[in-house]
Image 1 (cartoon, rainbow, N blue to C red):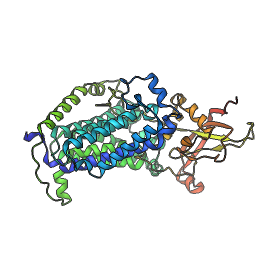
Image 2: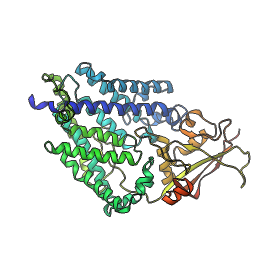
Image 3: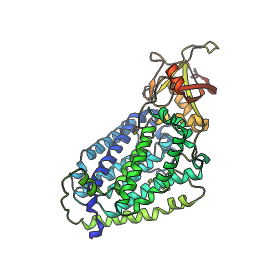
Image 4: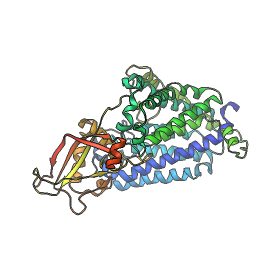
Length: 476
């Protein structure tokens, strides 16, 4: 079937798959380095306890069958190794069926992790990475031209990401409609980056331009993805540019990077190859019939499952970042339907004094990404995901977000638990654990240009109230 493949998109497919595999490498590495403290056997929210009350059908995962920290580490590092192999071109050096098996393995490996990750994996980009990885299974390899249907499915996924995010904003916070949301967002976003202070200090008229441009990029441009070339490539380019703007302005894990990768499905690969003076792509033979059947089956599956996200997009009660099935296929997406006007941070402190008094000296724990020390410039971590730091941001919004995990986290600080301490930047008690730990809520704001020059501080903070009174381990 000549209509089945698109030979002009060979370069787009190649770059898309290699870049997507690189993001899987980041995701598996993140899991391997953080799981012991977050949901390991002795973690804050242990997997074995989770699998006791959540059945396999609700959260398909190999860890329902067996769990140990050693097994999980092997699973995660195995996924990282396979991802690295795909990045290096292994999936293009093997037969088509083997390439599909490699991508299917990446999807299954990561699905098993996400479905037992609980609170730590409740982010929309987990489902986005899984859905993109599932479609990559059917995108083929160097042995065949990319199927037209899968390229359209990737565009449909990108459309839902962008248009869903645009709708949730317009329907949500009034500041998106009056173009004032970016007066606050760069300062109150979950994890600012090294340039966020400078973005926040841009003139307010430019913030209004930013907001208006965001609406155009998310509510108008996505329709261009389904237009003929070169319009589709232009639309993809505009989306890529806006995503790089977001990459520069903050840390959003791999959300922006997956969106950039998906946009490549709409880029005319032949035109790009000509632009970079790449050699012409040799014509490939017709794809095998079994492959065509699998692609058609996957297309039908996505079309059927699209009913739920389409209905959600049309609903006035639109929900964002929701999976309608346990396999995270054909999900609904969106972000920042509401914007915080003020930034509240939970500051965790400990003391080694036996008795807490008004004169007790408290020492502050340092986190890698979230604001703490007012003189420390925020760092760039994305696409790496600091899961504890992100949840600390939610805790600052409301204690309800921390109900399940903050207490166990403090308990591990009181014992100097090594896996937990590895998630932190600074432990003020390296020799012996503290006797007491407390948490206090501060109001943070970016300093002005004048304050920065005079104090060298990027943040100014004001104590608001107690978040957790001094806590100690019970003595038997």
